[in-house]
Length: 412
Image 1 (tube, rainbow, N blue to C red):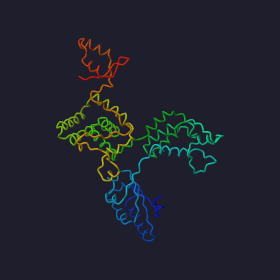
Image 2: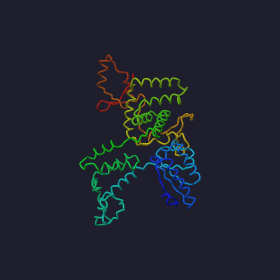
Image 3: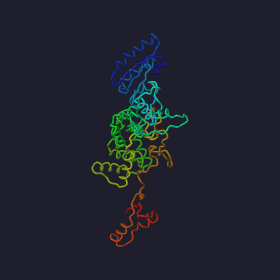
Image 4: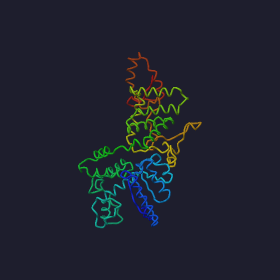
């Protein structure tokens, strides 16, 4: 499209199957064509990050002199994968992932192509509504009459498995990737018609691989999110990002390593015992598994929420080590706590979980059980018939419900 609008000769290469010799041949031909006809050449280089930074130097003179119009595509962070000199001569456009609504539109267009073409429709025309809706509208004797809502299973007569619930689930599981969505749709259409909707959904969830890239930005974004959550004293957010990292990487000990960094960089001399304690915790975790009911329950809640690995790290708590990443909005809006003489508020959790509490406050008893019968039994047999002193605290903070139980706990 760009080449046609600029009247340029279009050619494309992929760095996965081409070398610098192929690129140089195209560049020399483009240079000669520009001199003879005045027509520029546009080169689309896919997976440009596959060329190392030394190999990328071949682009510089041709781009700088205007002999070639270079369009490169990469799934990696250009700040780290592209030559700085080349990057400074180009503009970076970020292609954001598709929304669930856009993915669902693509799925419906694909399903429309699979339906029999009505005689009133041209072969290349994509209907805006499912066939069942179009048919019901056409069958209405009065133009002012509204068609009745069709059965969910009959929206796509040729593919009854593609129910609205299935399409919505595919849109969510695809995480903004249209190719993934179409692959999942292909699995749905190939499934036996007798399979249940719930079973089909389970099969789709198992077929989706994690989007985590060990060498990509996800790793550092989650590290940054966990570190900033601890710095901001948000225990629930720190627990959530620890669970996300653990699920995707499978290395729980990393949370302790982060504590060592926090103890050194953020706590520092304010508490001389923090760093030795963090190092001792790291040593203990390598030999035994520390137990804490409060942290265990918090981690289980966070782990359940972290199962959805498609939720991105909020931009304000991402790290921005390069100028390009700052221009793209990484770290924008983050308030660095040590820079203020007073407490400040940051959002550390994704918008889907803001307000959720994974790590309950110390001493919180809202989820504990109060059983009057068992307490009286303990008072008679284990406390010499004396009333438990914690009753006074309970009378101030909680009252038994109709069944004689409330959630309550005390610590001794």
